[in-house]
Image (cartoon, rainbow, N blue to C red; front, side, top):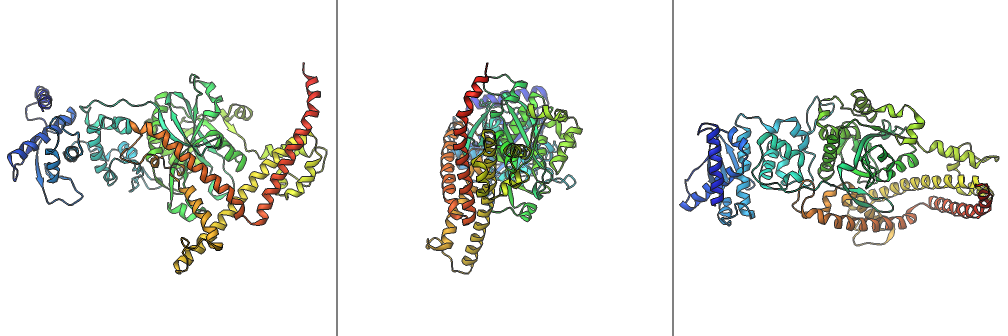
Length: 635
């Protein structure tokens, strides 16, 4: 108590030296209905709140505020501020008086009262004629009320930063967001670690808080998609290891949802021990991709649901190798990786924002107004304040790239020399041309029963087998590559067939349930139950925690923003646990999937796998015969 009184006395002296005695915030206590002890406790609460407030806040709010207790506030309301008066819920006084007098807010009861008073003082500040932070565009961007494209500058009414919130009440409105965050800004030493960009904004607006901040880790924790068989992996990303950020465009194709391409950001992460520099572009296994995607928690993609925002939109962290394989080998689409002209500090700020979005964002994906291009633009806008003044807003990935080039943010000159772009990793070509080259090698001197690689893939596996049995070493190697591509094609078709079958089973089960004839929990036999079991497992796979783009599920509890403190120690354990569970679920699904497929599709997969075994055996048999001649040619 003496220490607090001393701090307040010093503050009063500083205020008095700078301005007339009346020019500072003053909190008076309304003693009506209070005992002497309760009046003293209320004054102590006011003193504790004043001691927590930044000097700039106190000096700017030159007024007297009356504090009183009420027992008639609604059940979910802790306080109200009106006309220079603050009313707090009466029960909060009991919690405050039960505290240890040497620790103002060390327990929950004391903190609740102090938080409520600071919250209402933030509202008094906003209504005093001073700048209202709740209207600041930068605050609205960071808080989760972004501008909606094609809506004349209007902002979305629904806050999109909903995960890992310190208090759901902050999502009610920008004014409540400021007040709730003002509490944590002043009472939580770790606030700057959990919400660093907001901390800087609040410091600039209200002044520096009196408490000593906690030390923050420089590494950003990211729950990324796994590679090498893993389903999920933890990435502790040090911004100092990111040499550059590229705009990564998956080139358009003819499908409706891919007609304008797909927007992503590529992080050029240097290998451990390598100093940031151009050589980091060769460290492809360490590069990451930030990709906003619609989380489709259904067995089909509905265009209508995509238009209306029924699908959640989330930020996924992916290994670059996985993205390259997905687009160039499976979807047969090229990738362009265009460097962005960003300073080192801007890269760090962008990564910090990306981590915040990764842990907190839960938006709604709309094919037109909130797609991957819009999401990527918002991330650049919020993460790099300099870009907020540029007219980069676009609803198409190719349009966003053109605007980035026009404003000198993206350096597309790296694509001018196509061969150099491929060699240096600024472009990753679709594998369709490569497969046609392999087809030409496989058919060298022979008339294969197809005109090109795609027609070869469409043949029945048994039709391809005779041409695999007598090929030479070079042709066998090419046929092996083609058969691996054919298997990926067949697997993609099998997945689509499986989705359709499960969708039909789900529809039939729903209709039976509505008619009162289905009880799958009791009946585990028959076709309906056989289809229901994989459907349940598939939904578990689609909706499972961080794999579904919700890393917040890894750390349930009271934490908010970026993981901090003991959460950092718990996170690797949580990621390993979820990865093990997801691997088991994935392996179970793969084992059972064949049994759910139509007989014809199952036979096609098995025959293609038999072809791969035949080609592998033949390649090993032919290679030793070739090796001595090759060895003799060596110097």
